[in-house]
Length: 431
Length: 186
Ligand code: SF4
Image (cartoon, rainbow over all chains, first blue to last red; front, side, top):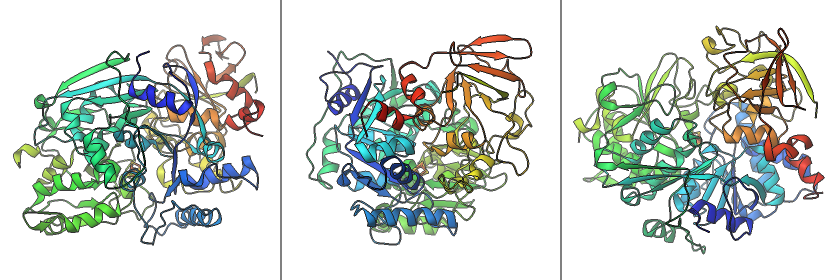
């Protein structure tokens, strides 16, 4: 029976020869990831349900990254990190990356990739909707809530309805003024925020396989913005090269059969696309940058799991080099690794960090920061009637702080060009 | 599982995301401490922009004053209810505020799972769009034997969808009770 890559991975995880969309199956989970917002309640439910002698099904498969509310004086937020720390100690959880130590990593989805937890052909479940990011590695990755996570913590299992797959193919070469963010915003504009609900979003085509792992993660990260259960890109030589540097775990590469059945297929020619934004207040509210150019801004933000990777900063630096920003511009590296790379990676001999500092940007510590608003003292948080352009993934009302603010989502190139003028600006004017 | 749920309706639009249901800044309170967790009820739906809160007309907050309980127990939504983050705090907040059921055209996957697996609120799908027919404040009766919603004022009955494969989990009261019932865990 012909199957898609998602169906094949789910079949393997469920111990079946084949699965069909719509079928309910129990999966064996390879990695469970949680963080400071959902970890504490997950632990609490696990203890309540499995009793005082609750056992973690497999300690090596549990990974915990505090990342959401980190650099804040909020006492409740800090209590959450305390709970994680105590849990990790009590149960000797090795894969715990504590704040305030050398092990601190930053945003979970990027840290998972960097630390070698993303393994092709496996199943990764996380207590965060953007867990779909890991699908860039040819694996099944999806987000769940605390109860499901607590169930996995005790049993290693989760029920899932096999999704139908949608296929998005980008032919041709990606022009220099476009990034993966433009591609996913295109798709969202076409399918809307519930166009992929309960479905797998499979990305394919030359322009996709030409992308670096960083950029591929931007695509899969925002599958959830279309309601997708998972986003997935077949592993290839680019994936293998990335893995080789980070892990020696064995893996199996799956790919969709040529005659696999899809719910729907979309085809784009990358050469014909132009820079786009998602206007307030929805990631599917697409428009071309040209149409909204000139919109006055009060803030620019480059950060988060989808827009704070090394490739995002390299792109932004290409435009910000030797320029000055007109509005407060925040640089928030997704991970401590990326933060380190800002110092070691340069363009024409000037480090990314210097390029940003010289341009007048504020560089913050790695964490989720204002991507989800956060406590009142969060760096870059929107206030009052702020008009923000951001490389993050959600612009729902109040998502970045103030309910009255307006957020435009865009590529790091578009955000950088806009920072230079203080108005929404097409990056083609600066490249 | 109760077979009949009677209550006042609270009506919302499409794409009610989890930041509207419980804004991110409130995700820090304990979910297990009886007293502290009431804050989730207090802030339930506080992220919904006022003009769209309580349709038609809006301007009717789900929670008023210092309360943590809402006068409304049945939420009527449009499509893609609960989209956005994986925060289980969202269905939890609605439950804390006294909501028993949601009736929407469609749900985002994680919110739906969380509602069912945690046994917080009952997510029902309507056959047709109801959020422009039912008004905030209408007395309605949800019948879980024939999956219908009745508007008390004129006895008009609207058909809902059968929950399908997840019904055993709903009837058990959540995924843990379901797993115990079926012998998957002890
Ligand atoms: S950076 Fe933003 S989207 Fe990514 S995990 Fe953190 S809060 Fe979520």
